[in-house]
Each structure stands twice: as structure tokens, then as C-alpha cells.
Amino acid sequence: MNLNDIHRGIHKNRGRKRLGRGTGSGHGKTAGRGHKGQGSRNGVSFKSVFQGGTMPMIRRIPKRGFNNRWALRVAVVNVGDLQTAFEAGDEVTPEALVAKNLARGCYDELKVLGEGELTKKLTVSAHRFSKSAAEKISQAGGQVIVLPGKTPVEKKKKQLAQTE
Image (cartoon, rainbow, N blue to C red; front, side, top):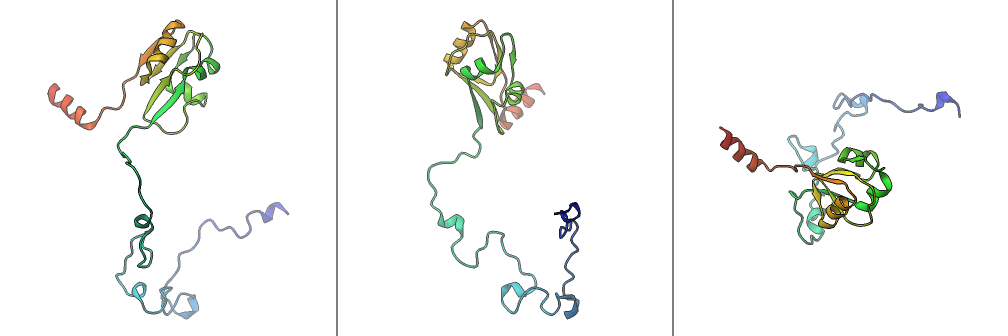
């Protein structure tokens, strides 16, 4: 294989189909719509999930339980993980946890749990703490800082109304 073979056959900017411009264009006569049927008529529009008249997948698959779409996504970090990842006297913030790869993914709130032992003096900032985690951090001589969480829209509206 040669370097000039790598991009052979790859076209970044593909030209648009010129439909209905005669048979020589390759998209003449029926203009890629086929013969007869709903899709061949003008003004046709399908939903993107339409499956040709059969029962749609979303209606065939059984649904179980309750899915709260407004629930907060909570990332969890154990005290034992803080013991191994940080040095004594360090400041533990959500950004520091992301940098150390302890709080992964997208989340709304960070919670520190009390699994494991902590002997180092750390200043830990998070949205939530379990009772055991807060006890272990304070027993080690550290500090617990509770960060403010997301405030719902209704609370914000009430706060604005009170200030005006």
C-alpha cells in the first residue's frame, strides 16, 4: 500500500443528485421515487420512525417500571477512592475528580459515599455527602464543603419575584 492509496475513493464533498433531468443523468423519469405508491406522489411525508404500516418498534417493545425524565443524574465517589487518588492537604473538587477520572460522564450532582477508609486531611467539595462520608472526612481532620445544586425554574421565579 502506498500513501497515495489511503484516500482513494473517499470524496469529502459529494455533489447533490440532480433529479428529473432526463434519463442521461441517471435520475431521470421517476427521479428515484420508483413506480406508483405513496412515496411516488408529490407532497408525501413520512415520520422518520414509520415502518411501512407494521406496528412500530416503539409500540411493540414492552415498557416496564417508571422512567423519571426530570431526575438528576448523580455521580458517586467513595471515600476510599479519594484516599488513593489524592495527597494529604489536597482540595477535592468536581473538576479535580474529573481530571483524576473518578467522576466520569455527564452528571448534575456529585455525591461522596463512605465506602473505604480515609486517613488524609482533605478539603472535599461536593453537592451531597452521606453521613458516614462526612464523619470520615471530619475525623481525618478534613473539611466538608456542600456545593449548591441546580435550582428548579419555579424556585428561580419565586426568588426573582421576592427581590422585585
